[in-house]
Length: 248
Image (cartoon, rainbow, N blue to C red; front, side):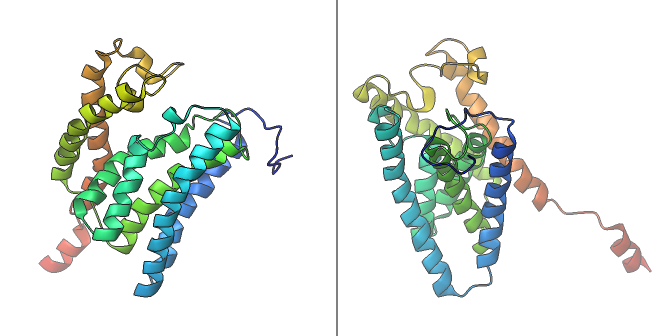
């Protein structure tokens, strides 16, 4: 049955109709909810931000329960140390402080990586299995926060933020590397210790640790590509009709 929550669940297929429908619903939710909130008064928006922050922290406990209790994964692999988690916490900092750099970090960590995770989830089973729902819910919440900041507060990253966030991300690398070593296997946050298994783009990179020589500039390139829509939207548009009217 399509809405059976107790299983058995269908294996996940990336090109299935149900996955495509879930993506469409998620994108509409991410775009339209902040748009619906935009005319609201200050107290309503503050309440929405409080709910969002609560959802971020609720998500951490939900992921820990679902993936350890229901799927037997080790807790070492489920700690909030991925870039998508950092993006979510950066949004919490932004909503509490309105610190623009926090938003920029959330944008560059969240838009490409949470977006890709929603499109290609690492789920064993399809909707409505718990692992699929939690995975999609978690990454949709990340993108929702970014959308809220852009639509409710007019936030946009600047060109210099590509460099600043890239530098900050590189500064974080040794700390994540150390955490991986302290936790031990199978912890491999940011894929610093080894490449992920299976068929993926990182399979074409050199063996660890030399894969980082390619992965770091590749990540910076992803940040640049993520900024392109903002850059293009800020470019002045040529309006021939207006020029003709002015000359007349």
